View 1 (cartoon, rainbow, N blue to C red):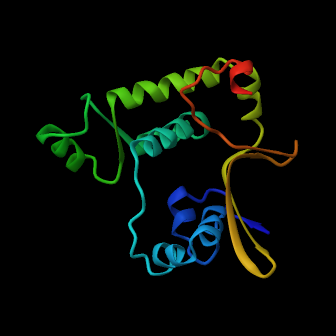
View 2 (tube, helix red, strand yellow):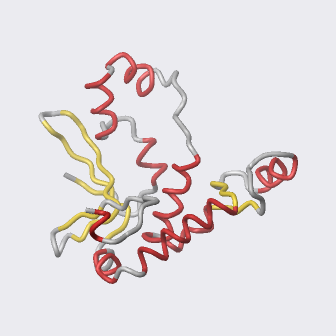
Length: 169
């Protein structure tokens, strides 16, 4: 098993020599679809606004020094001429609307209000990529956060539900 400390999310997804858990699940569900998407690359990657929100929330919690990779459009919807101009001026950045950023900031504030959550995301490494083999098949994994010394991995998730323990459990 090797690790790629400092590798980006784009690097991880660009690595087509190793299977991810998503790829393995796709093979089990639809082998022909896996072949089209991952081998032939004829199926476009699915994109949803909530993916951008999850990525931004991850960045706020795990790698706040990288918030410059995002641009916040000063509008309620990502549409129209002003948005197209903004998008052109921020090429290569993930663009969020004001309501999207507000939701992400609320998620981040909920995380910061939980001392146990903040403690879990300290003393380790964020966005940790690992490469290895299982039964001779090259595999990859990207942990949101890993604390090798304490022996745990954290998977950060966003939810619109309240963060009270009774509701979350």
